[in-house]
Amino acid sequence: MLTVLVIDDDDGLRDTIGLMLETEGFRPVLADNGKSGLQQALSLRPDLVLVDLRMPGLSGIEVCKQIRAAGMKTPLIVLSAVGDEMDKVLLLEIGADDYVVKPFGTRELLARIRALLRRSSPEETKSVSFSDVEVDLTRRVVRKKGEELKLTRAEYNLLTYFLQNPDRALTRDMILNSVWGYESFPNTRTVDAHVVRLRQKLEPDQGTPHHFLTVHGVGYRFLP
Amino acid sequence: MLTVLVIDDDDGLRDTIGLMLETEGFRPVLADNGKSGLQQALSLRPDLVLVDLRMPGLSGIEVCKQIRAAGMKTPLIVLSAVGDEMDKVLLLEIGADDYVVKPFGTRELLARIRALLRRSSPEETKSVSFSDVEVDLTRRVVRKKGEELKLTRAEYNLLTYFLQNPDRALTRDMILNSVWGYESFPNTRTVDAHVVRLRQKLEPDQGTPHHFLTVHGVGYRFLP
DNA sequence: CGCGAGTTTACAAGATTTTTACAATTTCGC
DNA sequence: GCGAAATTGTAAAAATCTTGTAAACTCGCG
Image 1 (cartoon, each protein chain N blue to C red):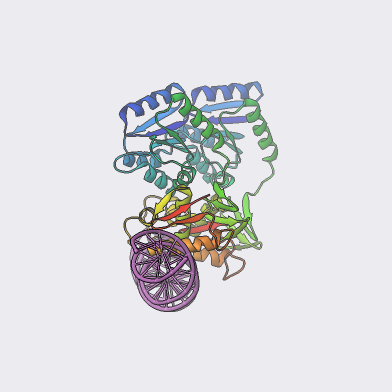
Image 2: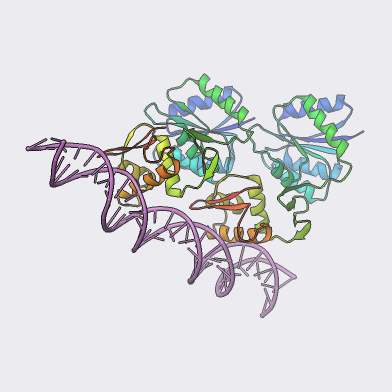
């Protein structure tokens, strides 16, 4: 019998899912916050984890990351609310395998659980691409026209941030906060310096950016 | 008549397998938990053992290890649930010979049992290799160009962790968590120290790593 | 005690990040 | 359109961070 860990602070939803899993032949284990959920994930080693993205305390993002940081490869489904920005890149960044947007039917959730369990055994390589650039999220390697090229940590982080926010005007402050975090306070010009290097390394047409566009007076916009 | 020991906590499955074995001309012996299964394995000396990986109490992993620790060479098949990470290295680490993913058909299980009995008579050595390095998982010995070299316990554990996670960017924390476990909290630089020694002992081209690559700002990546 | 394995420390070498300075470009009032 | 002011591009210098490595240290054990 397969154990499914459900981490969600919404009591009603958590119980609903638990009941559904039980009737469908799974063994549900419930956690009502990120901290205890993470502990159970690590000690229990469940066959699959469902985790709510938005929780007080330890967020779903953190839970996912730490589960992966502990070396566990357990299939992981994120439950996200409607407004949440949820894309493939963020998903892979935090190590999740799939996501379901609330509100969802139990049928849909079940289908995704089964699908994930079915395909989770063979190791998939996870990558996203745009134009002639391919970003391999598990290897942390970037290829342009198939040939591997080296990005530094900041460049790589910036790139994945752009990938997570395609076609949106992003201020330098937004970028700094998201990519550099709240701890460090670099000059906003730092962003420019790194964008320059991304362009040098990734733009197909040197001299005229096609992907990393500048939004004058604001910041940048990434166009896949 | 060949005796087959079945260790599984799932009553239905255990009985199904038992029945199947009986009709196929084997003598099945059933155990519903790891502890009694291990005892029976040691006292009964069966010709083959089927063991469920995930059981309360003594897990299948432990059962396998202890059977091997007791010096028994009995063929051993692991029954694993879908989500379980099950690769050649782990399999050999714990001393199992084959595995079947649940749910499985009795035909498939039977075929594997027969195949294993057929080839289990001649002593097989179990190893994985990369470049000119050969890792003998049963003997816990590493050879480079055929010549045996000594790895310490930590070095060996780190190496097998790399072997289990080829071609993936691994953070120092992931490595620490998986190789050193949650109990001890060594400095992350400890990882570096051990990687250095693995490189010194295993890299063919001293000075430029071909297998133990560093991912600057992140950790390491092992390339077989 | 002395040994061996494992861990930490220290520091040099190297890589990356940030800042800086100046050139190029864009914006905007006229 | 013109020119000043603001903004951005860019390369190179400066500051910081990371890693490789060896040596020092710790710990358990015969």
